[in-house]
View (cartoon, rainbow, N blue to C red):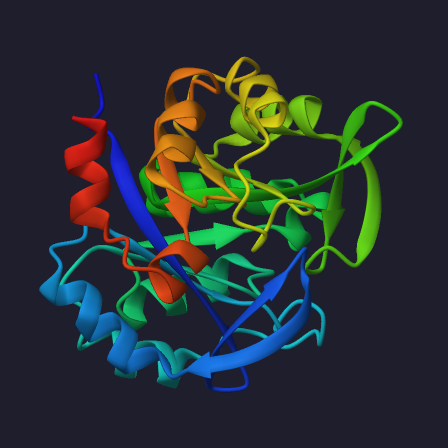
Length: 243
């Protein structure tokens, strides 16, 4: 059985750390490097740093900045945002990323997932799925939640897993940043569709929410942002609670 992981997520836009609710109302909450140093001291399992502006603005990853903060990061790091080719993946890994996260580009080019997994190993390819509840179904959105794809979350998860993804990050758009709990139905649907690890994200307001995502949603890991930025909660205390 895989070790349960608690993964802080840092959202990055225009060189600053930002946070919003439901993929909207973004506000500046600091800078990346100090946050990474805090998590270094807190013995975090791994961390995700996502450039939320890259796909919307159609620019590739900022490799120089990734190299700068990866040099300070003492834990495995997943980088996402703007990845649209195997060359982007190669450059991010060379800049210090341990894993890369692919989202928007996969909808137009599923072969990107397959070729990246073949070239670099599926263990470092994470596919992110952002979903919104519509008419009783969870539908996928790309470009930081701004474009409907017509794909259903469970079905798309099964597709990308079959294409070679090593992990899936599933995020509820409505629950993101609200701190009122994860969308357990969405997590359970995705987890039940694949046999690769699923990371639950979007809505953690307390340690009990994490427990529910793992026990009821059947996720293998939980990611959170607001709870670690705006409350006294820490990844270590979350681990103690879950234990």
